[in-house]
Image (cartoon, rainbow, N blue to C red):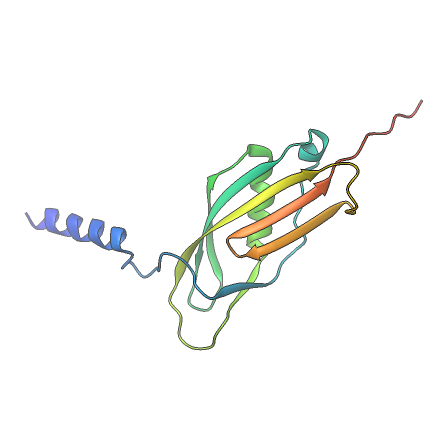
Length: 142
């Protein structure tokens, strides 16, 4: 009967978020990161994609772990590399709890006639990142 109680406690802690990690990371922002890469095969195939990742963040705003939730194969590694390159900090000083955060990285191809250069990155929040690339017509050399 003791084992059953300990399993029940573990399930309770996991379901209530009392395992040391808050559900979401409120007040966390991206200070800097590497420029994300739009996979060349995605540009050539003119593919849009959405990659969902979960990150574990320590009390001092360091990314401890990145886990893939979903996404197209060609895009997941590039999204993971981008998220791993992020340097984070808390909006306010003080004591913060370790937390988990869902990060959505959206990849979108823009029309060829757009005024954008080759790539644009829009960070709406840590959980909402848009990476856009301009499609281009391949040149043929004879």
